[in-house]
Structures are given as structure tokens and as C-alpha cells.
Image 1 (cartoon, rainbow, N blue to C red):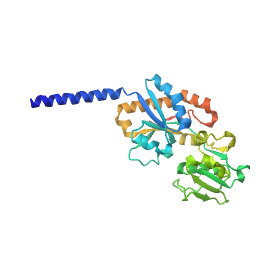
Image 2 (cartoon, rainbow, N blue to C red):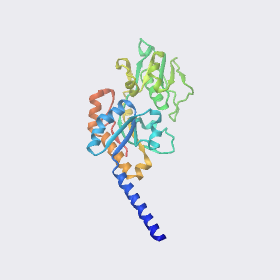
Image 3 (cartoon, rainbow, N blue to C red):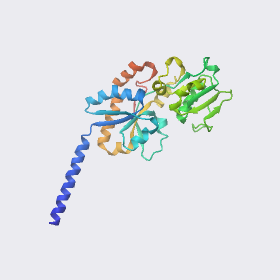
Image 4 (cartoon, rainbow, N blue to C red):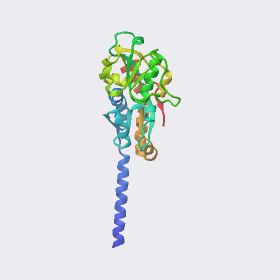
Length: 277
């Protein structure tokens, strides 16, 4: 009798396991967290229709960029779409994330704040306080003759601490949290804004006086789809989802959508759409 009960329990466990596996294989919903513009817009209007044809439903949630990597690592979402590789490499969570594909590039721009004069006359500049974007902004200022040298060491790290740095020619640069940059524009002569920050903040393109034009930055710092590395390698259902999502964002339909809607403001073509799997 005891053996029969054990047998029945074993069979029940096996059936439940098979049932769950079968259920997982039928999981056709992909959950992605993203920044609002242009990321969520691209996902909802260009990527979702492609995935629908493949039998997948795409669920997009606009989420604060500061918690998106943790949210993917914690399995609240399958992937995120908001960052570039240099920023992903600063992530220190215990769950390894990887870039499945590069999709589009957002040039960082210099916008007028309180100044009514030329860029060369500006003395106070606000830039983003995360290191990767701060260095981009400083390099853009140098490229436009605002500062003479970029305060970065041989390891690509900022050589100053604190939120302020003054250049040799008397220009003061202040590091500010990205979400506060637009609200702080009138407090500085000029502000360096990441593209999506300008779009989300409805900053007029007429205020832009310069932007990144270095072609090498396109491939190096295009925005990516980030996902969980171990799950991609070991979970066939998860891998299928990420592969479907990646194939979709690399399609010509997505580049056509971006170019039609934002033109040259955002780069999305063969130079930025790069498969990293």
C-alpha cells in the first residue's frame, strides 16, 4: 500500500512538472520596461506589430531608468530598453545582464538655457551626473571649443569629485541628476541634454545649438535591449522571447518607423542596429 501511494505521488509530481513545462512553452507574452521616449514609442508602435505576427504579445511599461536594470534582474520584466553598453557595464547587481542588440543612437545636444548669446560666450553649463553621459557632454563641449581639456584619466574616469568643475578658461560645469536637467535649464547659460531627456521634457529643437556628430559614437553608444544572461543561456522559453524581440528591433520596419517619425534627430539604421547575441 505504501509503495502504491509513493508511486501515485511520483506520477502526480511528474504530471505537474510536464504540465508546467508545457505551459511555459506556451508563454507568448514578452514584458519589457523602457524609457518613455523614444523607447516605449518604438516598442509599442513598431516592434509590437512585428511580434504579433510571430505569435507574441508585447507588454511595455514605462519605468524610471534608475530601476530598470534591477527590475529585469529581479524578473519583473524580461528585458529593458533605455541604455547604452557603457552604462550597462556599470551595473553591479548580482544577476548578470547582457546586451542582446543595439538599436538606435541618440545624439547628446547642447541647448540654450538662460543665455541669449553665442555658445562661445557661455560660462556656466549643466550636464548629466552619471559618469558615462558626463564624459560625453564634456567631450562635446571640447569639440565645440567651450573647454580646452576633458578631465578624464587614462582609465576613462572623471578626475574630479563633487558636482562642480571649473576649466582652465573659466567655464564652470555642474553635474545634475538627469531628471532635473530640463527644470534647471534657466539656471545655467547652456545645458547638455541626452536626446531622450530633451524629447520627454518637450524641449524645443530651436534651442539646440550643437550636437554629437562623431560617427564612431553611433556603434559604440547605441541604445540596447538588455536581458538576463544566465536565463538566456539556460531557459529555452526565455531565449525564444529574447530572440523574437531582438529580431524585431533589428528589422528594417523599425528603422523606417524611427526615421519617418524623428528624422535625423535619432539614428536608426545599419550603423546602429547591431546583433550582439
